[in-house]
Length: 516
Image 1 (spheres, rainbow, N blue to C red):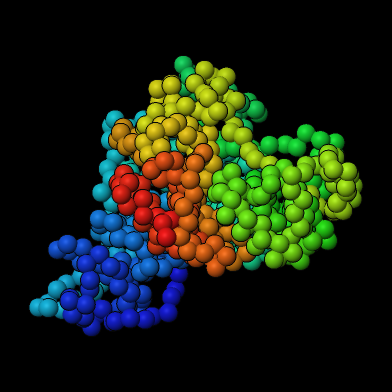
Image 2 (image 1 turned 45 degrees about the horizontal axis):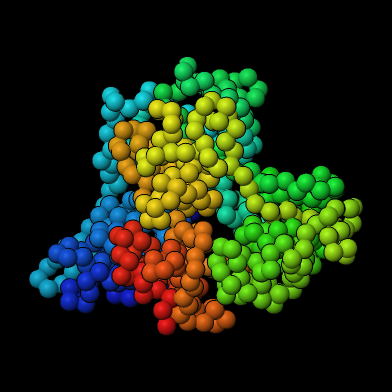
């Protein structure tokens, strides 16, 4: 998506404003030449950029300034104030950058700056790069390679039959019917032609010859590489019960999956969602938006408690129940029939549509067969390089040494995958960029967005400020005095502040989150 059109408000920077009205480090929204602009004064410099995030159109004037960058409050995309470049996903496109001039004690925003690229090609770059996987990590890597001046051959081999898509939307607005399909592709087909990215669809890489540096597909195609990125993502865990292969039983991972559910939902009246995962619950909310009766079956006592804690788990259950979802918790499906789901407690839930969301598993088979070290994911170092030189991994399959938690972690979230793809691309070009990103994700349930920053597998203390019920709160997950993760509802700016505090290792700042 490009920069969204917004209503012009605030001062006309083209006519000049008193410099004293631009507070240090605080974005100021205004306009010039009929376009919305954000002005930021940082130390002795003043910057002016487009006012809307190029991801989903978030308001950058409500974002957080850190150094010479500004972050979007919605999904934490980060832009350079100097160049407008999108330096951290989920935004991939830059924002417009404007020239500024100080005349006496007044500041003027003048004309748009021309886009410039500082990247240059290098003889040390690999001759050809193959990216295995066409998801978030693979797409972000391919784009970053070109942004960094790589001129060699890029081949992206994807098992999917469609090009890279906005996967979070597949369980959210697109499935709910509120986002058209033209919003779903990350890039149009001509983008790949213009940037000389060979996109090979419907081909599954089943083996790697690390000595010959070749990747082999199930159909017999062979792709040679000098550097390789494994970005194969994850696949849904299949339900091992009778009836799980019936035609009205669906999993949700690809655009084809979402299309199939939408097609079935046109005639369906009652759906059963098996699993209270993020995907399962987002699918439940989307199906309710289509006026389908929805029941959720899950073995947990409360949804998402293992990820977000008791308070958020209870809130999410209550929110879905307010919208008509019926929960059957501490229960599992025994079998699926043509018109119903039999539960282990003996009851049967009527259903003409079943959506299964019980988790995913990383696609690591080809890498493991090639001798690449793995442990619940492909093991990588701080530069995302695997145990085999010239082979990198990013996204859902990568288990990396997280400097913030001190653990080797694997995270199955969109923004993490994109940012790792960008880092891996730079490292394939020899730049030695450490993967020190702070995991971030968001989940949408009806009109409520929940943001999560950090990584907490286990914790022994939960601190809450604000009110979960009022949809205005911050929850901090801690072990002892160490803050592991910060969850916010209705407090986007605090989520950004937490992300920056994690990045800077500022435990003093982190200790304030969730405190009354």
